[in-house]
Length: 314
Image (cartoon, rainbow, N blue to C red; front, side):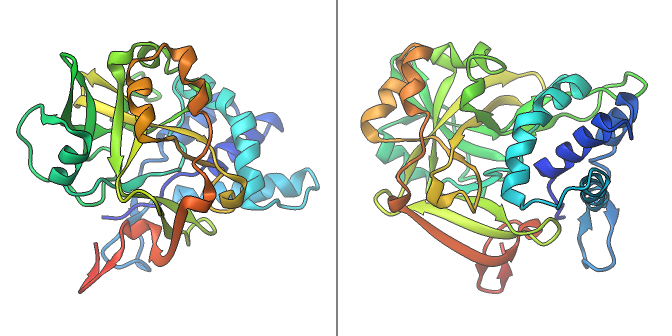
């Protein structure tokens, strides 16, 4: 089943509703609790969508109208949301929001990964999905007893929200970690080298286009068929071993695709990421050179999650 992901425009809409007095925090919490509810859309055969996405997009447009502003482009809204909405998210949910960025990637073939990283399998596992979405298993390379091991973990740290009656809701995966939050929300794990990892990937995807009609764009490196994405990992009660990818500001040349990108590490930097003190990682808070990034803009709807292959969509 496909779902329309919640993007930063929704959180900015909630921020506006609160700031202009059109909604109270209790109402905002209730809205957030219902974001995950899905209904069947007859216009999308065999798929369900999150209808609230369109509702919040309308709220955002109404808020612009209420204050007499022309509605800004998606890129500008992302920046405003990042500047204002984190305080709202923390206040209403007590947890960071898993922004709609790099929510799918291709890890590559497992034996190729093992050979490239010169790692041993930590435990037996199957090949895993060719395209990894949040809350699905993906390959992670980490240190164990002085050597590199390769292990399958669930993509996304589980964040458990509470309902309006105080009940625990189903955990949601936070699969991206902002670099500028490594010494804050993510400090518990980022400061401990044992909780850092490398995420093997051949390419990653971004959703591009207007809300409700986003298309899938794949990005890869011209120089490296498989690259290492900086990550964090931990053990969780809900899903066992989990991991998240670290994000940084995107190169200006690629900002029309997304304003953030994965932190990609050169081969000589792997050991530093896995062993250095947190202060020594600041050098990696930069995007990979845009000249080495290959962009493949497809016509595959983001909600279908994949790429066109023989016989349909994967």
